[in-house]
Amino acid sequence: MKGFSLPKIGIKTNGQFFVHFKVDGERFRFSNGKVIDSPHSPNRVEGEQRQLSAELLRSDFTSALGRGWKPERTIRIDKVKTIGETLEIALKEKLSVADSRVYRRDIKWTANHFRDYIKTHKKTNKPITSLDAKVLLDFLQFSSESNSTRKLFKRVLQAILTPHLPSSTVDAFRSIKLPKSKSKLHKPIKDVQALLSEVEAFNPHLHLCCLLAYGCLLRPHREIRELTWNDFADDLSFISLSGSRNKGKRNRIVPIPAFVLPYLKPSHPSHNIFTGTENAFNPDYFKTLWGKFKKKSVLLQREQTLYSFRHTGAINVFKKTGSLQKLQSVMGHSNLQVTLTYLRGLEVPQLSVDDMPEL
Image (cartoon, rainbow, N blue to C red; front, top):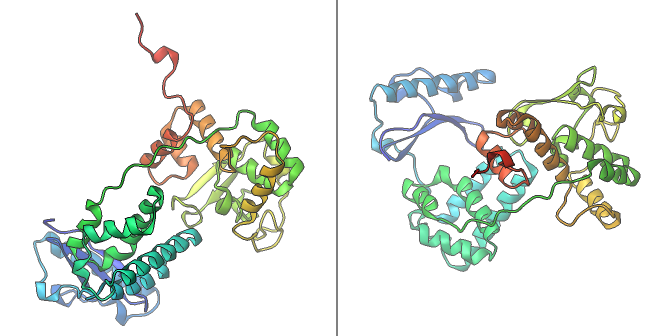
């Protein structure tokens, strides 16, 4: 790789700021601007000024690189010498910034498997430069026979280690091509009203969760479970979620359909809509309820899950609007590519009979 990457701000586990970037494929890290005659040194100030100073330092390095400045190679970021040391340092840093319970679980799971692999194959004390594509592929084959699990391990391990790897090892990750998984078709619900009635008779909390998943296209296990009355407009016309509250990391405002309103009984703004307190149910609450419902339901089909309500709602939105942008917005997807991938897994007709060839 030639040229330079745009500088970014990083934070060490001890809270210290630094700016990092690549020049001609080499990684560099600076905690102050002495080398470019910049006065900014984030770690010499306190509180909110530290973040501001880091932003100014990043801007100064961006300007310097744009003018053609290049750092001396002797100032290059130090590399951890062994695979084992790299893993432990990188793991600690990644866990310090991961805010999703599921993602933290995947990080620990992947790291444990990789730790077992390098120990079993006596690679813990090998230099980090020996971590090439052959070793990585061997780890993936050693750790699981499932292609989907191998893909997960590759993606998560790459995210953990990349900030601490030489460019040759980063390229090794990219060179590994695993077989594509077979597309899984999500089964939509044909008679939503009938299934909702069956859920309502089973449990009112699960019923409201299904209503919000279908009518507002929210994700059940975090977005819906953690809702408070403060997330609702005063007139119950819409729900607003900040980027930190949803998977797509984008602020979302979704309208509330009329059929949901009779089931909303607002109380104190800070109270969870299910528990009536400031605490939400545990993360597995709806998963456990759904498992019990599945055993009693006579309408539920084998391929349908709690997420099928959200999938069915998405199909209806797309059929009504024909707009990918609107669907992306209401689903909370980070970009249109995610929305397109999502639609490919649903029973969404892409062509009508009028679109077909004629004689």
